[in-house]
Image 1 (cartoon, rainbow, N blue to C red):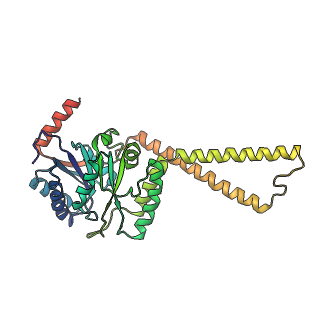
Image 2 (tube, helix red, strand yellow; image 1 turned 180 degrees about the vertical axis):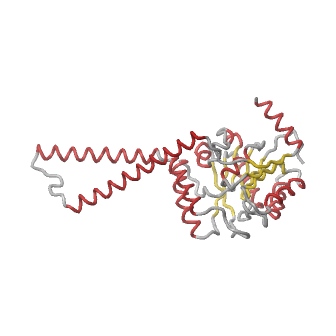
Image 3 (cartoon, one colour; image 1 turned 30 degrees about the vertical axis):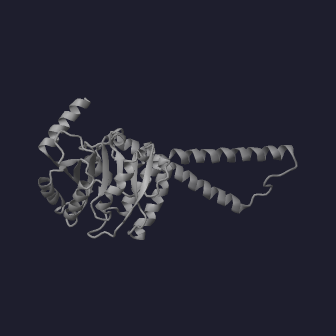
Length: 327
């Protein structure tokens, strides 16, 4: 068992959403996997607004397991990124290990990721090579992976896999909190050395995923905004080239007998108008998205609010000492 004043090697950060039937089995398997590493660790578990028995079971686990240093209950469902951000704010470890509690990923495979991480990587991410989700989940996820690869300028294939081990200093540098929640794209784009490790994916044993089509769409839009610098540059370049071509055509009409597109059909004009209109609408929508996000950021509305937090007494003392040294 780790002493209260020691900084753990790993902080295991878990978000839970309607996991009353899986959380006991998950915790038992997770604790066994972490003990097998022979490294110091702490577990921080967050109930993401579930109104079933999830928080009650987390409370029982908190009082039973000395390695569970904090349990957090959010007022309402705020999303996985927000829940993990709440956990990050309480974590002390040298490395953060992120994982879902729905048993679709096996805690027993944690040593595989840790082994790769300890080779000197900044970030090691799981890659679900045999994904057991419906097409309704897989297709939007593949689309999101393409966007996130472009946004983060990395070669990772499975961004949606929560199973990750990341250098804690890299995560803390972003100062995530209620007004600026966890962004894996930002972290991955800042990581110097990244690696993926194949992990086994299982069908969900209990309940259903909290990832709805609406949430997946919003998540994709978040990442499109992150990479929006490139689309604007592409549209600007296309407009510039088309402008040059049009100027060349006008000059050729006056100076030479050669005619570039001498006759222009009504169909070509109509198609050009339709394409131009849709491009204009797309650009205006992106500008609108920027405007709305800037407005919401100015309003300073927290993305999540903590309702209850349980902490071990020795953990609070150690955290106070750590914060005092940092200050």
